[in-house]
Amino acid sequence: MRETEYETKLDREQIDCYGLGESCGDNYDVEASATVTWEFYISSRTWGIKNMSAYATKVKANIKVNIWQENGKDDEPQIFHIDTSDEEWNIDTDISAIEFGDDIRPWRLEVDFQEQTLTIYF
Image 1: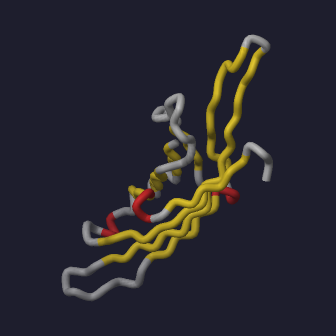
Image 2 (image 1 turned 180 degrees about the vertical axis):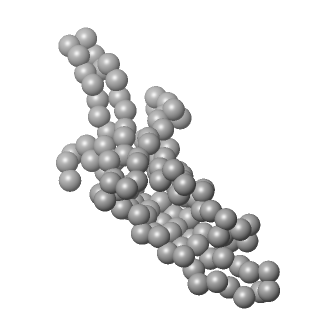
């Protein structure tokens, strides 16, 4: 791991899932955890700091979708193991909430199953 590379673990309260499809209906809950690997960089010039930013480089997530049926029976849970190393998922990084003086770290992950996009909010 490089000096400017970090790993942050996110739990269920920090992960939102969308686009699971009609097979889930409205009666489901999600258990999830994820690890976001990210980098912080500084662009400097002789006159000072031009830019500071962060971006996610890799995401690994484990997502379990529990579906509840109207008759009270449970379907077999759907398990998803997401690893952006396999290149099926796209990573988007949103740094719009970072302000000077704040700590910098991922605080939320959105998983869009339909678009296969992971959006990491710093």
